[in-house]
Image (cartoon, rainbow, N blue to C red):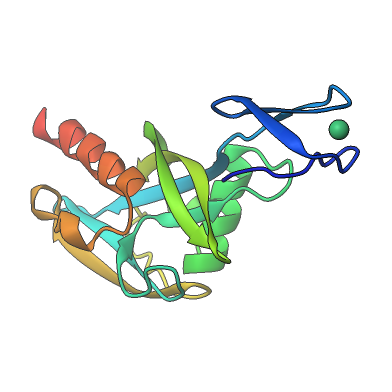
Length: 172
Ligand SMILES: [Zn+2]
């Protein structure tokens, strides 16, 4: 994302370097990535469950479950909220999510491209728990962890998350 005007005084911004902008009044503005969380569920027979995106951008492509952090939410709160919204899951329905990796991605939104920084986790559903797709999840697809179709994953951050998951499961 390119920043044009200072959010503090409205003056034009000058790009100092990379993500650092400054206006004539000396305000420094940082164009940092937008944080998101993503979760991969692994079945007892080591298949990974993925979300079929129900909204643009990249509707119909595969994604992790999760989304953007709201306001000053922390990662664990956002994770719990997103799994409730997208799959109807409560924290007692899944094992404590394990951190995998983080990676940057690029998300087209309203005519510009947002930089995102996604933190990925994996977990297993408790026995008898069935996730119900809702919100921006159109469906759920499962793949053997080493046979995920990378061309159907919607962005580079999710591809990095799957690669990290594959590493966890190649060592056991
Ligand atoms: Zn300013």
